[in-house]
Image (cartoon, rainbow, N blue to C red; front, top):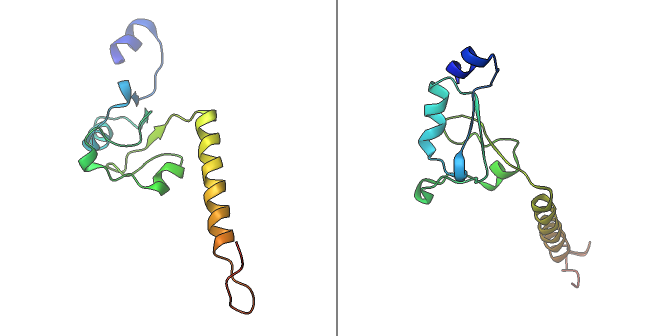
Length: 110
C-alpha cells in the first residue's frame, strides 16, 4: 500500500478487510503489531471454531475487541438487523410476560 501511495498519491488507512470473512484469533494481535488499527469482517467468529471466544455482548458492541484487543468491525445489513431486533423483541417480551408475578406473589396467568 505504501508503494501504491508513492506511485499514485492515493491515501489509505491501515484497515484490514478480511477476504471471504475468514480470520484467526491470532490475526488481531498480528495486525496490531504491524501498524493496522482496525479490521472489517462479515463473520463474528474465527475460522477455527474451537478457539471462538465471541460472546453475545460482543455482537451488540460496535466492534469485537476479544482478539488481542484489536477492533474487528462487522458488516451490518439492515434486513439482518431487523431480523435480530424482531427476535430480541419476541424473546424479551416472552421472558417478561411469562415471568411476571402478581403483587400477592402468585404467578400471573399467561
